[in-house]
Amino acid sequence: MSSSPLSRPTSETRLSLSHITAQNETNLLGTVHGGVIMTLVDSAAGVVAARHSGGPAVTASMDEMVFLVPVRVGDVVHFSAQVNWTGRSSMEVGVRITADRWDAVGPQVHVASAYLVFVAVDEAGQPRAVPQVVPVTDEDRRRLREAEIRRSHRLARRAAIIASRQEDQSQADQERAGEGR
Image (tube, rainbow, N blue to C red; front, side):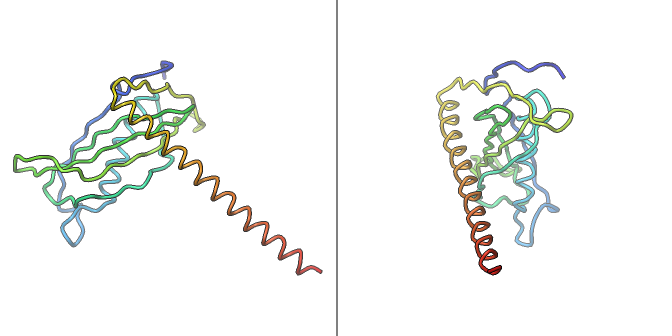
């Protein structure tokens, strides 16, 4: 693996992927399983993360994903992915999902958006440094600002969960100490 640059523009590793949905990907209502869409989102985002970081990257989390419209058999689903933010070893990749019919000319419909966090790893599976993302356009800068907001929310949620668990443990310890009297 060659050494990675210190920074990389978002445009350098963007990816577009299209997939024609099939009958075997649907539920009883004839709509595509959300898990199928999520798998394709993770795959597209994983390619972008690996390209940006110059090597393997693993999914650390996926933020909430809200499906706006159903995807049906015969829809062509399009996934557009790019790195929005980078930390020391982690990256947020945004994926916009749209769909249109395979047999008709018409506008693409926004299906969903997803934000995933990846961590670049070395051969031993340990985190490794990633190039910093360089936002070039106003859209890139907006995505970076919003990614920083999502990151602060993820960190705050994690801290709140840890504090809650510590409080529960403290209460359990106090109850056990009271039983021993």
